[in-house]
Length: 536
Image (cartoon, rainbow, N blue to C red; front, side, top):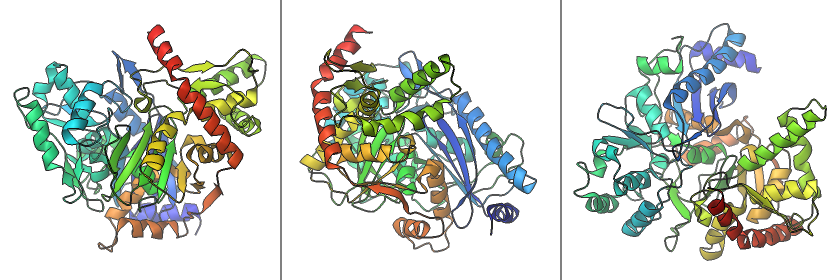
């Protein structure tokens, strides 16, 4: 059966499954069929803003972006089938993990949405980490809330609900204040035995906040819904938010919303112990599914959960390709100024392979792509920086290699804690995200940085929206006893593919080169600190 015929059959029968993800630079929707193959998609670009010292997205942009994204998908369906989708079997949505959405009792936003990118909660994160004996990163929702309490922000007394971006959109679409366990694990500590918020941490937080707020924290948190179960249905109002043309019918069951970390694990079939994946784009994070709990608290490492509640160690860096993307745009501008007709996308394909021709260590150059702060290395703010000694010659190949190395410098800092101090091992890391779009280059650089074989699944390019669609399909499965890992094994061994688009073992010379660069990177951190201090 060809793709057009399959799409028509799915639309006619209403058996399609929809996944939507709000990424940091793109909102994407993917419609899959019963064989889990993507049949239609839509996308809409958007960007965060730095407003009054806070990285945020306007909520109006959430809804206009969602509608634009779905409209592109519906137009693609209409072109093939003659009409847009009316009925869908199930759906799910995902968003950037962590962050802070604070709402009053009427559902009004109390302060602008604070994204994962904000490193403004260090005092709160330190207090909570000590109080819970559990690592609380600055990105976590509970750190944002407690920092607001410590700072005496006016809104804290009016807070009736806190959630994430995915949780907020899910509530607006269904009326349900619900969330998946993986997403919840980036808001507040989870007890592995009960698969619910940790009661001891709840009581400890209430003790810390006593007399400062009129509520208890358990009253504010969204309910956790188990992966594979429905978490509400699309209301008539929610259907209009997705599709203002009102072609989409309400009543669609939605699975629990998840974060981009969870959809990345699903989209790479990395939910079993000793599996791992790395998402590399605007930010970069490696998710290693643990066989056992870590021996102690490491403030640099997040402990989160898979969408089915298994422990994961997360090495997260706020900055990855943003500064490199800016350099690529500059090179493209320079090329056009010289009379060539070239698009930014083509520049990546031309320049990134040069990184493999450079010196193993990048030729002695140094860069920091800190567009924002970087908690792993201790920075509340960042300043993109490139520096070299006078005796280090400029070379385009070394320049590109250095910036790709720099994109993974903070990630390596976190991974060293897991591998060297905790003995965590994974057999292979599966990569996804823009870092891997140019064949071979991203994989070789990542393998050098992680000292681990790196593969890219043929389906990984479908991204988090596809991963979310798989979670929605899992919620509608016929065999209710089937585990998520078994379900995904079936998906990835079916006709959808699931093979690797080239698996690269770490090249010894590349590893030695990255190690040399990383020593320079670590020693040079005071240079970055001086830039932050001197360039306010």
